[in-house]
Every structure is written in C-alpha cells, then in structure tokens.
Amino acid sequence: MPVLTADMVEGLVKTGASCRVDADVKAKFKQGDKVIARNINPPTHTRLPRYVRGKRGVIALDHGVFAFPDTSAHGKGETPQHVYSVRFTARELWGKDASERDSLNIDMWDDYLDPA
Amino acid sequence: MAHRHTAPPSDTALRVKALESLLVEKGLVDPKALDEVIDTYENKVGPRNGAKVVARAWVNPDYKARLLDDGTAAIAELGFSGVQGEDMVVIENKPKVHNLLVCTLCSCYPWPTLGLPPVWYKAAPYRARAVSDPRGVLKEFGVTLADDVEVRVWDSTAELRYMVLPERPGGTDGMSEAELAALVTRDAMIGTAKVAAP
Figure 1: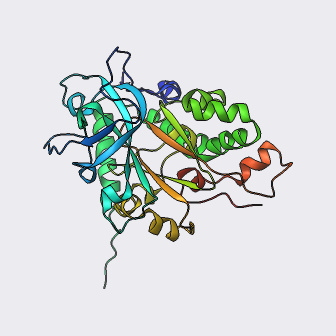
Figure 2 (figure 1 turned 90 degrees about the vertical axis):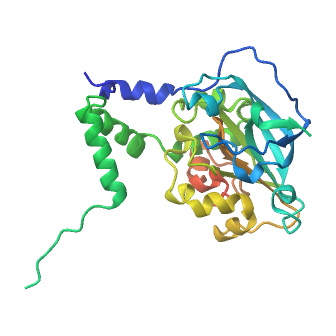
Figure 3 (figure 1 turned 180 degrees about the vertical axis):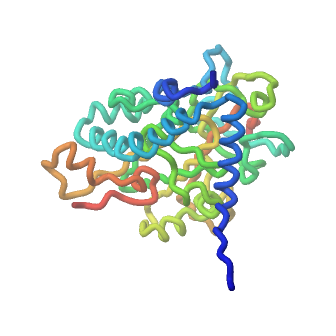
C-alpha cells in the first residue's frame, strides 16, 4: 500500500501542514525593537540569507511561534521560537545609492537576531 | 544517409522521471496520486481563487478588515486553504505604498490563492534583483512608480505566505464582485503589476 494514495490528495491539499507550534515561548523582541541580524555562516540549512547578515532593522510584526528550520531540518528538534517580520531600509542593505524611501520586510526567527 | 535521433528529454524532465520511478517502485507513492496532484494545480487551484478574495475585499469593508487582520481565516471563508497557505499574511497596496513579493531562498508562494508560481518567480534573476533593485524590476514589468511612492519588498524566508491586495482601479463603481474579480491578475497579487481600469 503506497504511503500517498489518490484518495488522500484532496484532504492533504486542503489541510496542509502548518509549521506553527502551539508552545508558550516568550518573545525576545516586541514591535519597534531595534535588532541586528547575526552574522553566522552555518554550512547546514538556514533561512537567514546572506544579504541581511550583520544588518540593522526594526521588528515590524510578531507572527507567533514556529519550528526552527536550522534544527528541525536536521532532525535536531523543533526549537520553537517567535518569528518576526523585520524591516530593513533599502539603504541599510544596499548602500547610499538605494532609494531613501524604500524598505524590505523579511521573516526572521529569534535565533537570527540580537538587540541593536 | 543521415540517421534520425529523438532528442532526449531535458535534464529536469529526466530527473523528475527518475524520481517518480523510484518513488513508485519503492511503494511510497501511487501514480494515481501524482495524477491527482497535477490535476489539482492544473485545473482546480490557481489565481482565480485569489482574484475572488481581492474582489470581496474591494466590495466589503468588513471582509477587507478581517483579511488584513487574519489572512488565513478570511481566505478560508471563501473556501481556500491548505498546502503553502497554512499561515497567510495579506498586505495592502496604497497610493503611496507599493508592495512586492519574492522568496530569495527558493520559491515560496501562496498556493491556495495563486496556484503554483510562474517560472520567472522561481528564477535566480528575479529572486536576486527583486530585493536589490525592486524599482528596476518593476519597470521591466511595466510598473513605473513615482519617487514619492514607497516600495516595500517582502522576502518570504519563513513559513508565512504573502499575497498583495492591489488597489481597486478607478472607473469600477457599480461593478459586481464577479466583474471586479475578472480584472484582477496573478501579477497584481504578487506586486509586479497594478490592476488596470476596465
């Protein structure tokens, strides 16, 4: 019996599988806090893109608690923690030739951030 | 005499065939299940779903408020939910704020409302340039923004999936929800287009 059969598809597609974790984990940051993205360079899975490492931003939204892919992708547990939308100015990321008006929001786990 | 060859399938097609053969041989997947998945995303789920969400938000201020407050729940009210849309965030374009979506790490995209992503969305040039030169990318898509409009790029690196609520174009007063939905394009919900007036 295959693991995935045709009659299972509709239900799976409709339901999906959220990576949200129902755990009471304290947030390290709140909206408006200034943060700096850690300059880490793991050889293993991470969702911290190089272009924000070491850059300064502001917590824009708290999305709640999610599993942490840097550990869950390697079978090392969910390490549940808050995920935030962090706002960086275009100039912080790309220098003075970027528009002074523009910005970028990116989703970051607690373990990617330090207070700035 | 020249002899004829059949060109072999592309590398990607060969890789998919090899993977599918292995999954089936090992008994992990029923080929009929794969057909069902393909049929779902070719014929049942696509950007017309998202267009219905946008049109509802345009005609119903209460729905729009719910959509911006809890995208997942408001989208589910119209029957759309599931894989790659488990945790939705809807962001609103305004006269002075234009939002643009990208996934720099791969191809994250809100499947229940927009279907599968277009090839360019998954391609390295879009993923690199949408963050470093969003105005240049928008111009190539035919969207030229005034200097006093803020461009906000959203890089979906985590498990949240985003959708843009585009601005309702002028000249649409009195149009029905279904007529409005017909105006909404996939690209307008990614942010690489605006919704044109009828």
